[in-house]
Length: 196
Ligand code: HEM
Image (cartoon, protein in one colour):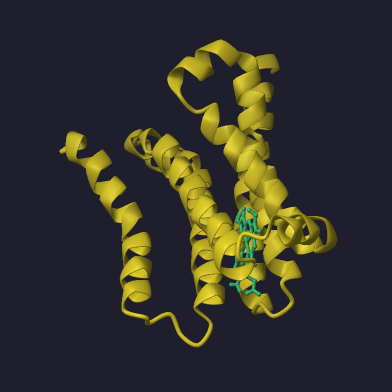
């Protein structure tokens, strides 16, 4: 059963992309396809990030380790959706005009924040192979804690798109807050049990 879990999660994580592709091929992305693509891929980036962050608490509460075994793959899916999000914006919104891309990155704070979040996800993605974990040692853990910063920046990016439904941004923000709070409490608890 366990050996089917990874391929099953992999296929499931591809479903939003496949559905989006089908809608695009059917010309069914609504009146503004480029914006719809941005919204969908942006939302899935954030969802995959939050799912990835929820795996450790899930393991702690259920005592089952299967969840954290999917962490690396699901984190890479967050990077995958973020890359489609970035490429979609560069191609369909800005027509790959490098000057406009650089200008937007500098002049639009919500783009700067989104791009910073992307750079963090990228750094985490390229340091995710086992060889890199060994090579970086303790620094790997330190670096990978930045996933919380990437999530907070993702929520700020969402909040800054003023057109967005505020309730949705508050929901994502609250989830990040709870997950980050849990992680800090867990860390303080293990320190106490070591010294106490
Ligand atoms: C790589 C740099 C990024 C760029 C250039 C970018 C750009 C955009 C753009 C143009 C939109 C659509 C705005 C609109 O509807 O007017 C958008 C939406 C969105 N982005 Fe990004 N983004 C980036 C990174 C990220 C990252 C890393 C995340 C998540 C961690 C993210 C999450 C979102 C979400 C959730 C939305 C949907 C907003 C909605 O529901 O209306 N973005 N982004």
